[in-house]
Length: 392
Image 1 (cartoon, rainbow, N blue to C red):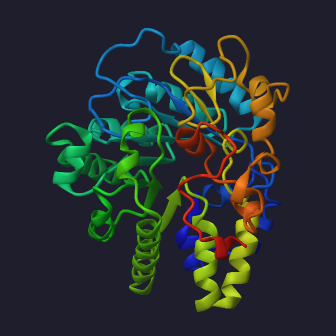
Image 2: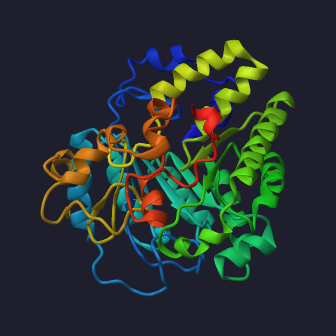
């Protein structure tokens, strides 16, 4: 996760994170990526069921009942363990998390245990009543997925009317006083919609947006040919920086992040090195605190059936099941070979990654994407768009 507004627009200084000792338990949410202990943010896919048919769904969700989901009681036991372990944020995802009737009960329990509870949703089921309930239980944030404006979004989501329902979910969340953000997965089909997304941020006064680089997992594995070329990726990241800066110059700042491609960090730094060398030095310090990709360390995933993964995209390799062992034990068990290597993956990456000057602030980028294309977890991430000259 690369904070474009934090880094490029200077909304965060290194001293901001240092003030809290860089401890996950002490840092406010917007500084959590700069923690030193990297207590994992946990994505819990509480259900595989979904009312939409998204073409890039990593969970391959369907609109049907699945009988192997963790029960409410099992979920609370899980939350007890996560809270004791020091997990700072529990992200409820799916499928579509709002389909589970006990979502408010589980989220309220997580808040009671001292964690920040957030949800990742398609937004279509967030009624005014649901939004009020989520606000009352202390939900910190609602991330609503949009793949573009109406035509493109409905095409990606496989259901006509999905866009209008998502917009209504945004409006209901804002009305209830919940912080709302957008989630946008970039690819060839919708990259031209980036400007429209920024316009929507301004028009609806939405405070946050995350632009996700495509990861080849689940149904998204069929979209490899729809991923941007390296040149197109650079152009998209430049555009995101330009539009973020314009909003800040108009005194309408938004929190803008890119996710799932840590080449973005050095790319932002290299651009600032030409435009503002003093700020570039501060950004480099922040990127060193961020430490790059954190799959298997600073982010983890628990599936609807209790399986534990390095992140939400790595669903073909489980480290164990919380029905058999607590997450805290599974996560710290470095007798598991892959888990051990993911804790310090910089030692194991190959090729240009191994000699890259940015390895300490990228950590080898996305291993699951490298494996999807080459079959080898440790080969270079094919989505890294930095040139040989830039990494030398």
